[in-house]
Image 1: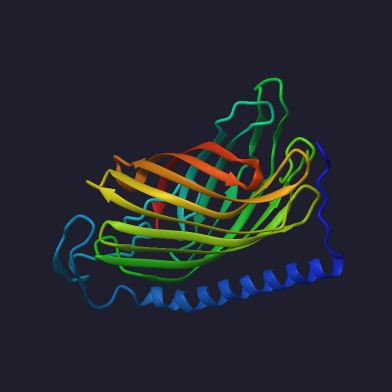
Image 2: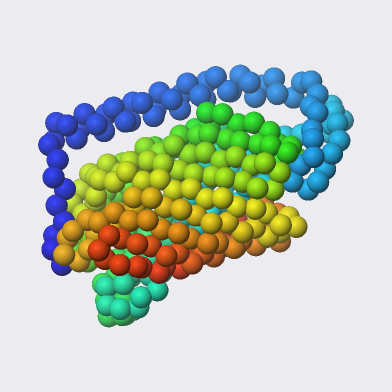
Length: 307
């Protein structure tokens, strides 16, 4: 495979990194300081709640029956979209290219999300386990690890309100201890500023994420991406949704970067509410002249305690 090289001027690159870093850090700090004081006074007063996800309809006094903001708010995470809320949870992700030909990839990763409060948290992604087909004969490696800081700028509604929404920002950094750009083109060290959002009306919800991948090492590719999904929950234990990925980058074995579009129908099952989630999706991607690429996505979430 050809070696993928990132072409950028050092001065411009460093300037972009500093601008993005200070911008996101400033937003997170301002949001945290502004909303920390709001949390201290959130227990006073009363709240009128209309019909919510479970069909509830009542006027609830917070003094006798408090209604807390639920970060999930009946919005089920999509298999390939990070959530806009903050929480304490553990995830396992599997992404498998269904064309089991030599060079096809399968990745398995673990993610730990943590929350300092309902406005500020982050994530730590364990080194990704990368494999290529045929398994046991193709290349394999532990890929990058990722650390991110997420701040919630806006959130409204609760777990029983008919409408709810959330908007947040995150800055992620990835580092690969044992880089293998020849075997896994398109993978490398990078910084990724992101904007995340979600909105729910009764049982129907929308969520999305957009960002820019800034390459820091050989192998990584500069890429602007946007992912969104529309879904609906059923009987409080099932959800169906469909995800759209725009401008996702794929590096071919020849070293050429092509942009693509993906469509991923998904089914989620959460028999114990927010405590446990299982989800699977079958995606179809089109990458320019490279043709159609079917991919299977799977996700398992265990939530410890949310904000």
